[in-house]
Image 1 (spheres, one colour):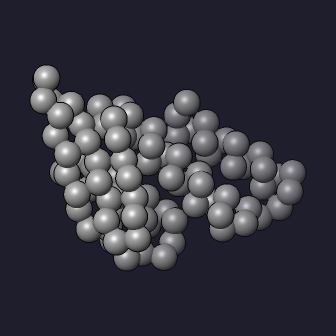
Image 2: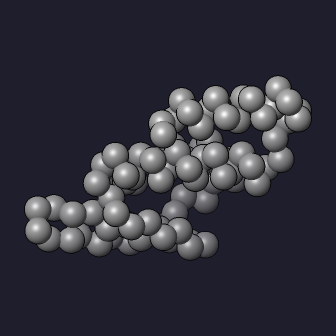
Amino acid sequence: SSFEDVDTILTEMKDRFGPAPQPVVWLCHLTKIRLFASQKGISFIKIDKLTMTFERQKGKVSVKKTVPLPSLKKAAEFEKAVLELLLS
């Protein structure tokens, strides 16, 4: 799966059923976050109300990090902010 696959599915849904409800839009953006994390070697992500915890392997060592979540209400802005946090 790729970002393009997610976008294609969302576009097809919009063509058939009209504008996607917000939960569907959020699901698509969260799926992109999971895909990105997987590509970057992140094996665990937990998103709570105020924080995000993620874990990645660095050699034989597992590094776990908890960061505050951005308080953004739009799914696309939230995705962008979280991807930047995962790169840090």
